[in-house]
Length: 283
Image 1 (cartoon, one colour):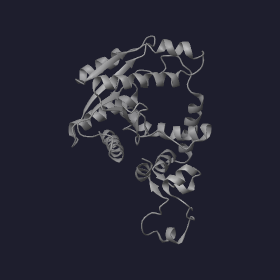
Image 2 (tube, one colour):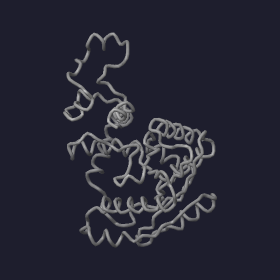
Image 3 (cartoon, rainbow, N blue to C red):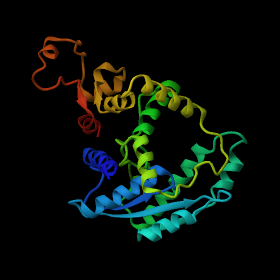
Image 4 (cartoon, rainbow, N blue to C red):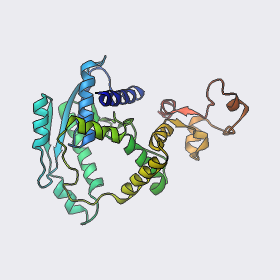
């Protein structure tokens, strides 16, 4: 129960920080059958019962045609709990296996196909938001992946509008630690569906970065949490994006350890923007 409360508080902070849920929302909760999406569904259902705003949750799973897919585990779980649930059958597995060479990862194409299906189903079900189960560790891993392999300083947006403008995607677990979600899933005995049914090779870059983060966190506890904090504590003038400088009206970066900084008083310097302010400036 203590773990459930801790995760609920972290999720509540994310929802509040990024205005993820509004009165009257109908939220499509994408449930893959993994620990994270089960946890997200359970926490959202709890929140819907006690939140000051009225919103509803419908769980959706996509059977993508993987051989031996045990979809009945989810169907039985949702029925036993009396949850609103839809199982959608779409054979994307044959498309992916045709397009992707053997021994290569299917994940990227599979994910894009699944996202397109979710957008369509959300419209059909009259859902105003789509909730995905990405967590803190996913966010900081993506940050490091983009930094090392793509030369970009970006992570996962906690809230975004789809390219077609018709769907809003939210990530309520973005402040939640993966280890705590795993412990919660074990505590609740969720009937987990394995994610390797397709036989695809794991993304080697993501695997390497995840291991790097695990090693860093073992030697320097709090590494992942500090990286998450950094995503919400941005100094634009200490970055080299000239377009960002122009849009924010920045001219010269303040020197570290200036008299103002040493005094430690007053409002933050204009180049120190909490993430909420940064997003508003970029809107």
